Image (cartoon, rainbow, N blue to C red; front, side, top):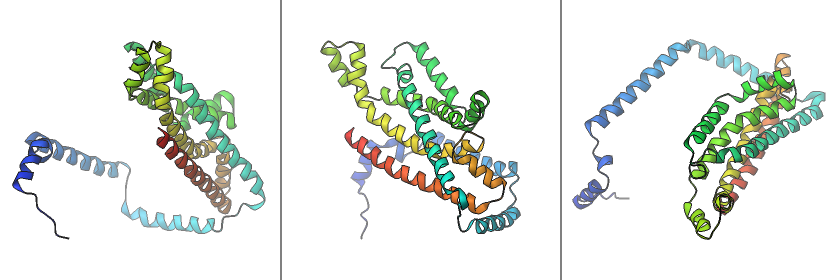
Length: 281
């Protein structure tokens, strides 16, 4: 296929429409080059900081290959039913933790939105509170709650709920702020009060978006529930850590396969539901 070169009139029109994209100033060019140089220097420094030695890669890959050979074939042994129960417990931890976080985050997210609460101080405090909560990793929350309520799935549910509460608060508040004001103005013009504006003007617009975000986090938290189980927060992660310590590599590979199958199934279902919700929105 023959490519057509733009005419002089097209170039003039493009220059008029996109002057910044076609002709960068000297300052923009220097900023781009400076950013690239800083990124390269940071990358090289990072390699030295982590003691990166190319000679260690090949022996490490050979050792990894030997572990993989020990994992084949995956074998649950006599603990098949126990592993399935632990997988169901992991899914329950992910589901309950995500649901609790979403339910708690919805009312608090309203306090962080400009089009719901005009008080700047309350919005600022609420947003910094969300930043603080989500700044702590789920694994750290698991260690904290294990110290508070003890070992088991209850600590896992609280860990995921705590971590996701901050993330949901930020995401929900941003979705509410991006909602169309026309519906709210229509309800206000028809005599509705502030609660009516939120209930019938804002919530119906953002509900599909919120539901899609919750479904995505529910899928992601299946993996998180496995990780926090390693430190004693219940679920299949506890068995995974135990089998690794006892060098039962065939059991380890079977547990990994179980987690992969569960995550893939949840990902497939949640992706379909998210598409349906986005289509409805």
